[in-house]
Image (cartoon, rainbow, N blue to C red; front, top):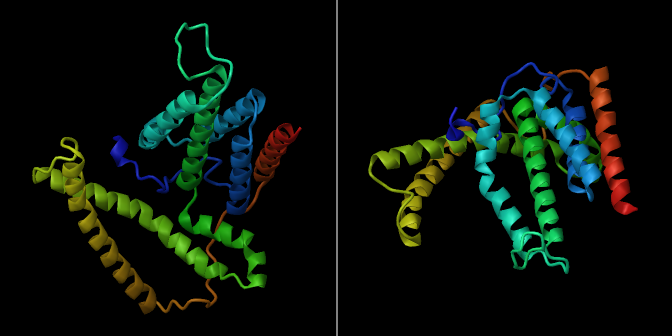
Amino acid sequence: MKSSDFLLGGYIPGTSFIHTMEPRVKLVSFLLLMIAVFVSSDSRTLILSGCMTVLVAFLANLGRRAWFAAFYRFSWLLMLAFVLNVVFYRHDAQIAATGITGPWSAAGLWRAISLTAQLSMGITLSVVLTATTMPTHLIKGMVALAQPLKKIGIPIDEAATITYLALRFTPILQEEIRAIVEAQKSRGIDFQSGGIVQRARALSSVLAPALQGTMRRSDKLAAAMEARGYRPGSPRAASLSPDATVLDACALVLSASLAFYAAFLRLV
């Protein structure tokens, strides 16, 4: 699998424990893990969150190639976050052991390492959530958790439909853009060399066909939904999803414990 073959946000079929979790429990558990990751303020909670993230990734069993492809897409973001924090994070105590003078400091280096680790864990959890959950189950879980918002007039069902279509269109749009890029390369268009103006012109040869293809697919989808009798606000049949188990409850308790522990250490 090449890095370009992995469709970010696409579902990868499997039979792992993460695949079979009840959607509502999975959503809440992953939300709590995200909270634990990004409120971690010291090495203890950061290491605990990292161990939990590695365990989740191992249980998802997505394969090493899928992980390489996923992180390849975000490598520029991780490197940018690391460099910016090392260079621009100001602190009095500088790193003197290396003998290299500059604006960096021990605090800046720790900040860069911790933020890069947090972003890596956030990417890992996001990939696991979308790759192990069918879009229908994911939306069903969101709708079930957001039911109380109906009482204040928020159109939950319509928002769920929009979210579902966005999730389904993301991998389709990636695949279509990739096909257009390959077709333009075969015509001799170079996307790697040249200045900013040349690259912008080359990019326009991709954006215009991609936008046209997206609009064409949207029109076909709207016609298909109307032909099948879809009406906004009308009740819809519920799709089947896995039932909650004891292991789901254990995962939820473990995620909640880690989130509360990380939040407690940050507040004290």
